[in-house]
Image (cartoon, rainbow over all chains, first blue to last red):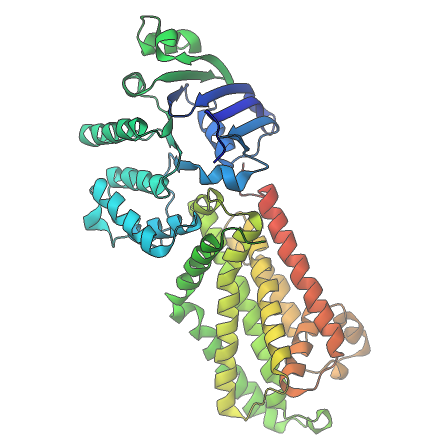
Length: 242
Length: 256
């Protein structure tokens, strides 16, 4: 990993889906060790930004760097540093959840013995050990959310990207995830979180960015962005929502 | 160049175990079909066919073709179904997010198709040995053709899986292009017995060179010089492989 204090950097990133402009000259930086909340209404460009950052989408112009590595040119190095907890449950239906984690670790260059040890530790941490040999279809929605997190963390990434990780979770699971994310951040992981839950963002994050219609409309540390208002009030103000 | 060998090995292992876990659907059907072809065409009909001018029994003539036909189908079906299902369920993202170069991704994904092609070839050869003594006159040539044919059609399967939008499109190439081309490629007949016009057309059929190469490796007899078959399959292998890598690189139907 390059010795960069900037974990994520986007410079004038533009992305079109046919004629629809999803990102319009998006530029921002996330510092190493930050807990960054990336907020916006549905369709604002949050998931598109994540997809461009992780290489799941091609952007038309601009530059994306992950710890100094260009996400397009040095994609192998940049992907090694990122763990993505996606919004949808996209698991291989043929594998048990333990196999799924071991293979995922393997893709990141981790040997099977170590991969199995990490998988067991994560399954225990997220209370999934009993389901170790089940396929993901046998899991409840909350368990699948936890499995998404396990998969994102299996290679111990420097940056954890979470796309609405607590959507649809019950209170107990939400608090479990919040505690774990806070702990990971304390240990030095950079966390990039998108959420519609203002309480979650306000409670966990140090820096906040708000995107609307593909443009960054507000960004800064939590104190600067909030200015003694609630996050919900600021969000409604800058997105023009009622 | 491979910079993440563990990653490639993990992906290859997943692809190989996937088809082995359903061997009753992936390995045994082509072997059973081969038994039927060998018995009906090779034994029941073949005994009544005078093939002495070719220097082989009809049964020995069709064995390499049947092996080729099943290598092609198995390799194609393996990668096309695996990649298409991965796209359908979107768990292809597991691979796309990994620190694997596009070259490595394709290498890992085609391992399943190649392994299945090789296993089916061994299976068909083994059952054929029960019908008639089968010699391998040129073992290195056999290995070369089994591997190149497997790679070509594993890559073709991946290209098909990327192109297909739904399950019905997935098998279009196989049903309407590959299967007719195999049957017209000299699996069951030598080129010389066809009408002159069809002979000319057959020269442009890629399967003809692959079947001929396989036939030479087992029997030492071929319609086409070995060098032509070898060069052609080498060219096809590299072309299909690099087209597949290119499609991964541009993210054709993989990235939005």
